[in-house]
Length: 382
Image 1 (spheres, helix red, strand yellow):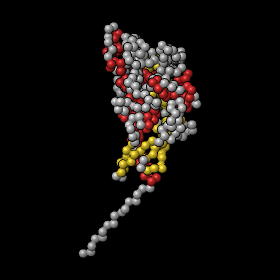
Image 2 (spheres, rainbow, N blue to C red; image 1 turned 90 degrees about the horizontal axis):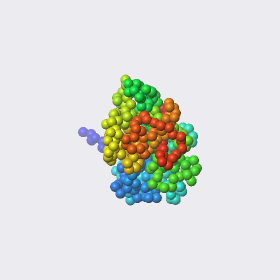
Image 3 (cartoon, rainbow, N blue to C red; image 1 turned 60 degrees about the horizontal axis):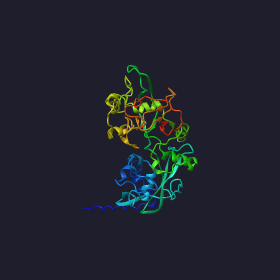
């Protein structure tokens, strides 16, 4: 018998440093996005340890750290873990991806170099209008860096396409004003626009002197006059949230999976269709009603401790602060004079203002007694 030929093993050539670096960065993609989008998961009970960059405050919910460039800066400065890196196992070897402080200082924030740079699109053609540029390297492959753009994908949430109702109706048998958003792609801010976000707006406008210096206020709602609220939203290609969109996002549909229901109900709270069954309704009946921590998480009314970025207040489609918290500025093309959600922490639980679809007028100027928050929305062409 003729002997069988012995197969010759193919020897795989080692990847060039350029190619290997690219492969490592790509493999690290999920970890990079997790750190960016889920920064709250990386924080221990002790909080962050970089007071000069971002404060860890008990009255601020951890969702504040999601898609937050100050948390990104804090993490790579060593304020979250002593030796920051993102480990990647590839080809039987462990690589460590790190961010580099490749960007100049922002004096309005801190004197040291930055681990990110603000970005806003100035020319057409780029998929993201705004975000943060960061630069990454790999410890085991020196001499190579990669710049990437981190988008603020945590800011807004999608409004499903369906039929919606506007405002509260006097006669529950009446349909009232009905509208739909079919073939429209609308993204609504989940939380109020904050001082941190407005600080970035000022920097991009070239007005660093307007930046709020006190870090303890960065997570709080930005209290801008109406015209500046509209200007802020427009700067990022957005608009001030409309009243009908606010109602759509806060009034839970009776048939969530049916975009063409026979009836469009007007629930009076985001959690109970019948206002009388909520703690707000019970407070009207019982003047001695004592607020519970859960009540205050759902709707921060008078007597509740002030908290920000509490995620327990989410509505059916993911926005927060439908009732209570701060008065909210709204654009209203249907009833222009009714441009303010008055329900807020400045009224007791028994107040008649604490119902969905109930609004009043605002002259657009801020007052210290009842400051007004705002949020934006964006319509995307697809």
